[in-house]
Image (tube, rainbow, N blue to C red):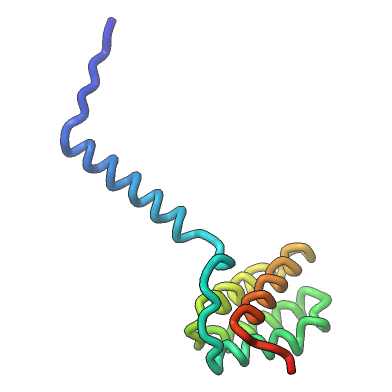
Length: 120
């Protein structure tokens, strides 16, 4: 018994659109680490300063959540998408494991440095 399958033109179009949507979704979900540094505007500068001032004291989940809220409040107003995305990741991971917090904190610190921020 031989089965024949001949997709219609409409079926091919639907499959192509679905494949394009999947590809776009995968590309949109990429990490911001490869992104351009972006501007160090006042909001980005404030987010980086808030983070640097509180990072060493953020040794428990409550303190991490508080710091992440403060950093995210400043980062919401920035045009620097890498700092904004890193601040959001910091907030998402504030209540997670120490390693996830450290990874997020390191990514935000790198985004700030790459944008030209310095503590001094």
